[in-house]
Image (tube, rainbow, N blue to C red):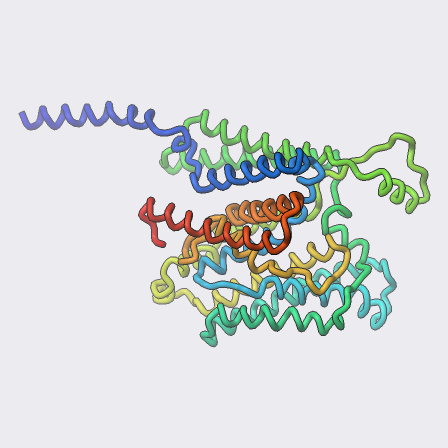
Length: 442
């Protein structure tokens, strides 16, 4: 009788399995992070609200282009801030590092290389030297911060708070408090409107990105299947892939709809010694700075998920004592993380100054707030051990959308900062409640 009852129970469980699987929610079958989905929903609501208050000016090709370009420098730094916060540190000096890197890079272009080395304005060597200089300055200062934190055991809050005050004003003395311009024309191509791919190349990039997305999804499905892991229904894979492709191609179509102003086109033709044909139009397309952000996002994601460095970062953030006992050199790891953060600040300095086509003393002001807020809003836990690169980039986009939208509506700058600060606190509170509900560490 006992064997018969066990057999009946086994049969009942077997029959119940598929039924319970079929009763799963739609988003559970898609295996989509609900927190990420909530962020996407919040971004859409913000865009729609500002579009209504601005009489349809927020969701236009022009504003989306500008919004994207303005987000890039903060988003790049936010990817590095994820690693810093995951390891239970903080970096308050990112805006100052951007400023000092931008100052030295600008001086290299407008003063030192022409006047000391003798390279004429427009020399093809100026832009590469300036870019390498910005990256080197940011990396060296970042590594120095990491050495103070890792080997000298000074809290990261103190080290980077001091750096916030020190490096920005070192940059001020480097430039004598002046705005440095003009920058090299090749250099400014990396900033946004001065460097775009045009319609045809933008479509090519969009199609390649769509194909890569489909391939990545299909490859991941096969890998899970070959290793015996559960796989999503085929329709779920197709849905995710379809949404991704529509989003990519829709974004490219929007950028391609933003036409270059006629006056600027005339100046471009005149610079080439040509006459612009009557009725001629040309669109901007995908900015080169956005391509740089995409490359950084892919590289940082691969570092986080596929490399030993990424595994050490998340292991250290999850339990620093256990990580050190397991043989991880947490001191050297700290230097590497802050050096990487500094490198990304140098890269952001290149993009920010190229977009402005000059170095101004207030460049990067309050970027500390924006970068940390982007990482935290994107799901990086201040307690360490948890964070995603794509979440930080989406967080940066949400932050920039709030600021741009409020500026378009006519909200005063002080009130804008009040709103941004409130959103940051609210986002952390939401994150705490979310983790409590899932029984995660806070």
